[in-house]
Length: 253
Image (cartoon, rainbow, N blue to C red; front, side, top):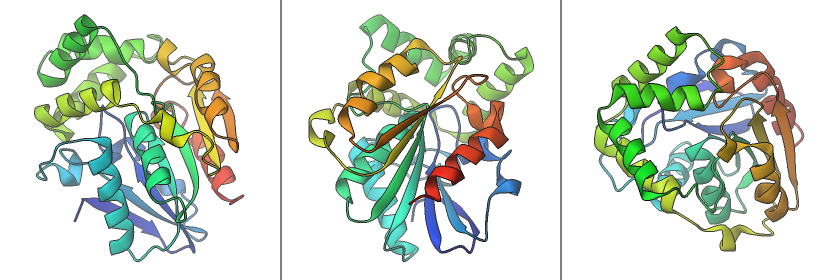
C-alpha cells in the first residue's frame, strides 16, 4: 500500500498529496490546526517520496491516480475530497476524471494544469540536473518559484528536504510527467467543484493568467483564490490562511 499518514475522525474524507520538492511533511505547519472533528485526512506520499520512498514505479499521472484510488479503497472511503499541490494538482485532476462519482471536490494549490507545463529541452535538462544532484540549480528553482522574497535559510531548507525525502530517479520521472503529460482534452466540462489557489509571488507558469486560461476555462464549477503574500508553497509561507481557504471550500461540498 502506498505510504500515508491519517489524522482525524470526521465524516468528510480528504486525500492530500504533495509537490515535486517534498513529501507530505511540507504540510507540517498546518497539521496541528486541522479540523479533525469534521474531516478525516490522509496525507499520501507518491512513489519515490516519503513513506513511499521504497516503492518503485513509472511515476506517471496514471500510476499516481491508480495509487490514490487504491488507497481510498483501502481506507474504505466511498467518497472523498482531494487536495493536490503543484504536480499533484495535475494528479488530482486525473483522479477526479478516473473516479468522477467518488470525488466530491478538489482543491488545487499552485497546480500544474491537465495540459502540463511544457518547456524547451534546455530548461528540462536544467530541471533534471537540479532534480538529480545540482543543489545550486535547485536553489535557483525554489527562488524563482517564490520571486526570491523569502529568507535564504528557507531555500536551503527546501533543497535539503528535497534530497532527504525523495529519490533522484523519482524526481526526474515526475519532472517528465508534469512537463510532458496532456490530458486536457479529456477533462473539459468535468463538473467536479474545484478551488484553484494561486500564489501572488509564484512563477509565471503558475500565475492567475495561466489558471484563467486553463482551469477556469475547462471546469464549469471552478473557483479561483489568490494568496497575494505567497509564492509556490503557501502551506509553508502562509499556512493558516491556506488552511482557512481549503477547509472553507471543502465544507461547502
